[in-house]
Image 1 (tube, rainbow, N blue to C red):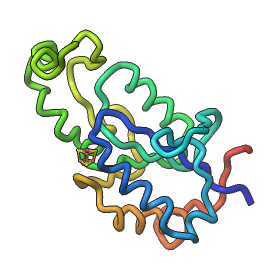
Image 2 (image 1 turned 180 degrees about the horizontal axis):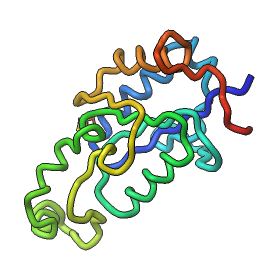
Image 3 (image 1 turned 30 degrees about the vertical axis):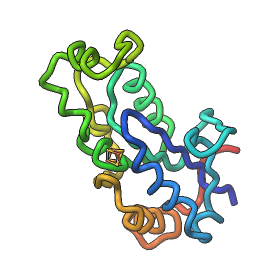
Image 4 (image 1 turned 135 degrees about the horizontal axis):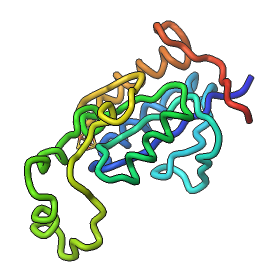
Length: 168
Ligand code: SF4
């Protein structure tokens, strides 16, 4: 049986939820037996974004056109998208700048603001696409995420995908 193809994408964030995602994906031998992490640049050097995925976990809020397109692409090629953490679920701390002038923010924070690729508003994942699950928390609770993954990957949840439909 094909293993479930897993991807993890990080947008604008402090990366605090990445640690919890690593914990949720790698701490349970039963889950590890069933999955294959094909895309997770924060964790591994070799990554493959091509083809369809069974599950994508998304951390961070969406802050520019490139990320909007990337998120749409993830949605179009993935069976289950999980918005992980408060940045991803609601916009998080980055969204504090929504009512300010983004150029003023860049100048006040960065020595070389011209290199900072952020645009006007900050978006949560669900403002751009429809995720299948939203798991907020700052950082997300790794045990809660693990419980959800167990239900999805091993069974017992309303939504269970125990067999990959992705071609090798
Ligand atoms: Fe960091 Fe909190 Fe955002 Fe997670 S939700 S990436 S811990 S700021």
